[in-house]
Length: 342
Image (cartoon, rainbow, N blue to C red; front, side, top):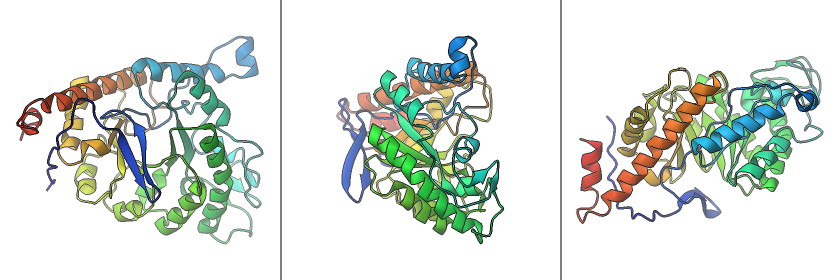
């Protein structure tokens, strides 16, 4: 059974939302229910001389523009330069195609830095994104005796990704997200995955978010043992995750609350998304919640992706207004609980 969260009073000038680490409290947004994206956006190419020099820069521009126009608070660069595996492994020495033939080393230069820098010229709040070492390792075939097993490969991939993470941290990303969809499948060793993420994120200043899509019931304890500032899960496509996660102590961490179905091209109405957020508010502290889609949007049409984001922002704003207005009533949370329903 879902536990119901007592709705605390929140003034109109809502306090800065915080993430918690062993080093203290650091804010990432000054509003309730801030919005972000998980990362990828549909790729749209253009023609002409500029596209000849960089055929995907226009796709980056459109992805960034669409997110800003939709009203997203913390945007990404759109992750348009390839799928989440290939974009990284194609740049790492020791890997050819999908085969590991030698010791895996850091890329000669940061893979995602240029597009992230561009996004930062357009918007002050940008999320840096890395595909996690465990997910990368499970997309590769080991073709060298240097690695006796996949777990050894995971740790070297973590060392390689650490330089990318430091570059994104140095340029000033608002949050650094590590994508580990493999964690929900049960195929990855979560103890090794935890150690790998600690290697990637050592000595970084930016808050760290761990995104895991899919069903969590069999892996939630191992995932919550990984020391990050924010966990990001899907609650639209995997609605049972709401009961699974709400039964756990997040220890003050933020929660990326996936409430837009990215597996379905149909555009949900803002009211539908709002109702999904309402369900989350009943069991999670609203101060913890960061509103985003379930997963990346690369496989959707541009129109579908944009409209989904726009409606998500509209739903988030409606929830923010309703929550703030409830504090005007001397009865405190009663009005908002009535708004949510029993």
